[in-house]
Length: 266
Image 1 (cartoon, one colour):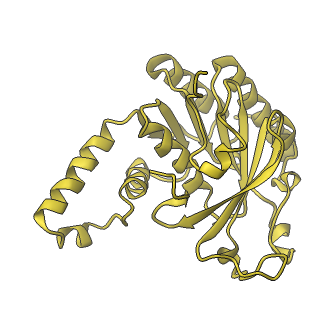
Image 2 (cartoon, rainbow, N blue to C red):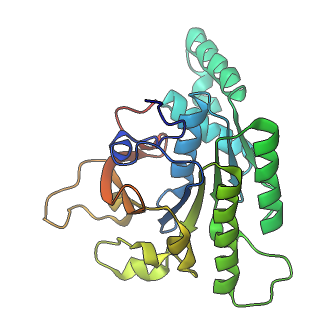
């Protein structure tokens, strides 16, 4: 049995989703600050470290910052030039070797601009020139269509449809990060549903998978719905929609060094 090329980075999620299929359209939603970019880069790092070409369409952060975050995920330590300068020479040399090795891994972080045609063109080019197997767009509500004059929700519906069609056209999974509505903040547990994606319900309708990120500590929530305390660093990924997998909540951990991770991660 051939193992899937593109798999989630979290073991508890892999038990539900053995692998993303060619043409899958994965929409990941969370409130601002929960860690969408970390989750996106967890996928990029997981795949690149295993030799799978992939690309990160990054509409917010500069490539240098992205490389630093991926480096933290790999080494398990915060990227700090000042702290690294105090390390023994042997440890500094080992970190330098890892940095050089990371630069050769098959992933790219590029900001092609927020125009939908530019983003589609860039991903097509990456597929043709580098043979990428996976692409992430971070994030959906920043994308616009030049000259579009209609309501914003209709514009985002066109964005979602175009990205869904691109995944099918190129035969690769495409993951799109999306913001949740601010009304979710008013709920006691701060958990959203797949139809809480801000400005446009089409993202949930078009997706083959909808994943919702949750970190109770971010909201200063200490106990779960049964009154039991959450473990330190607890986080989870709710696969709220899966056309061939069903739904489940995958528990994991979160840190600002590793992002979303478990004991089976790199």
